[in-house]
Length: 161
Image (cartoon, rainbow, N blue to C red):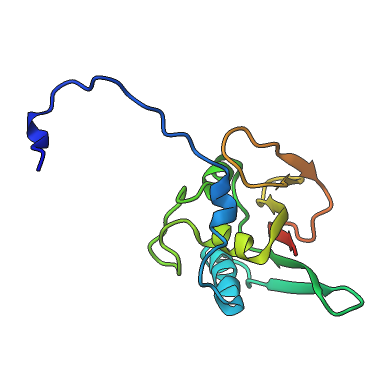
């Protein structure tokens, strides 16, 4: 056994780079559809506003052969503030203590288990337009603005396949 208390001065260092593959791999879990819905609804509940009744709308869209094509969940909670969006997207970026998944993986796991993220759009109370991202990844992420948002505040996630 090596006695690490005897180590002094590292001889070199290595960089451990984040891999965007994690966003797909998070979907390889044991979640069933109920678990996926629970994770997403739990986020809406955690972000609910005290002065407003929380509405969460879930829509499943099927093709003519009755095969699911995409999933959309929309809420009228508080939205994700601009300064928190990066952390909300990053695995383990935001941990909570009063939710189903206390490790900050729930939304990303649920999205990956459902398929491919088409978009996450979010709008806070004092924003005129919603912010929208079309992928989860590390590093610089393009954020778009859209006025085509169903609520005056909240979050909407669309996942295909």
